Amino acid sequence: MIENVIHLSKSKYCRAIQCKKILWLDKYREEEKIIKARENILNNGTKVGELARGLFGNYTNIPYNKDLSKMIEDTKYAIENKVNIITEASFNYNNNFCSVDILKNNPEGLEIYEVKSSTEISDIYLDDASYQYYVLSSLGYNVKKVSIVYINNQYIRHGKLELNKLFNVEDITEIAKDKYDEIKENIDQINIYMNKYKENNEPQELIGMQCVNPYQCEYWEYCIKDLPKPNVFDIKGGMHNDKKFEKYYEGKISFKELQYENLNSKYLEQIDFEINNKEPKIEKEPIKELLKSIKYPLYFIDFETFQLAIPEYEGTKPYQQLPFQYSLHIIEKEGAPIQHKEFLAEIEDKDFLRHFAESMIKDIPKNGSVIVYNMNFEHSRINELGEIFPDLKQELMRINNNMVDFLPPFKKRQYYMKEMEGSASIKKVLPALYPDDPELNYHNLPVVHNGEEASATFLSLKGKSKQEQEELRRGLLLYCQLDTYAMVKIWMKFKKII
Image (cartoon, helix red, strand yellow):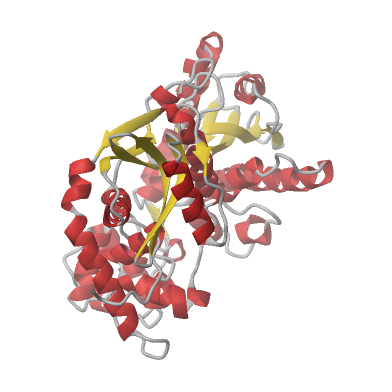
């Protein structure tokens, strides 16, 4: 048997399955890790795991202890005393440790239930659950069943939460059994790898799809630090990762090496503008048509939303985008001053969705143009609100029917500048159009700088002091206000060039 030089857990095993070098970097170069704040995802995962414990009724939880041997002993005691449902049941075999989310301890054998906050099963989840089967089976336990528990995103909450409808349970026992030898071999290879490459002997691994699948690697920037800038991985506008890696392996990495390649015209355009420092491209006719289509009063609106894996509000689904804030800039008629209105829900308000909808209807009383950036998003949120509140549906549909989208000219590259770097995001478009205006720079905002931060900030209000809440709410209002003021400034730029 190969000596296990590394203590593996199920998460470390899965990281190594993605790329063994991740474990080496975790051990010797952890300071190079770039962790993007995904607080919402972590919180959702934690809440789903805790809620799922009650899926099969009463349970005994093995409390976390830094001394893993204590958790293992507590688990052994619970199994021997015929506790039926054990959560966080912990085991160790030859330095391979795992905690099972839910363990059924039946007279005829054990059942493993691995809980995921996802809405579908991916290959890495199969590896995760199969690793647990390997550990328990190797310890001599009779594992009769292995299942993955995940979220049913078609479930709509009505009244009390129904766990048996919120969760899907899929039996993967045969897959876990079939993977036993594969997992044993993988563990051996991981240990050989970690034994071979010590601190001053960094492994040289080629970058590839494993860098982005199943997860974006936190060491990506470290591993591409020596590539020329800009490079194939900076191409925006929908170029798939497999195509980027294909070009990388062909040695076509820098924009200069890519400029004569057989690529989508959009990608070649970004490369051309960058290499040749070209002047802005403006197709006036489609912009003129867009301006013709809008009618006063003008309502420039933007929503902020958050998602919950576990639906807390009546009539909502898992991971539904729930609007909690809008900013609205209004121009009543040609030459009129700009008015600003806004809504930001109270974190404890259980009826915030209705209050959001009612406030928006009140603030958009006339049939002018409702101007947005990426219409599909706001359109969908309003449709969802109409389903939840049928009595408001007619007025909500009126707002939807008057919607005008400012995204297409940039997405279709009818208006394009080198500074947009291939992106049609308003975060790239606005500073490109107004490069010397610090008021229009999202980086200068005090608290919130993007939509993900807005969601996390709003959810973080719970439990904060009044003073802390006021500061965070001010940051939310400033961020959302800039999003709609950005559209006003884009409209002004459109008018100027026409």
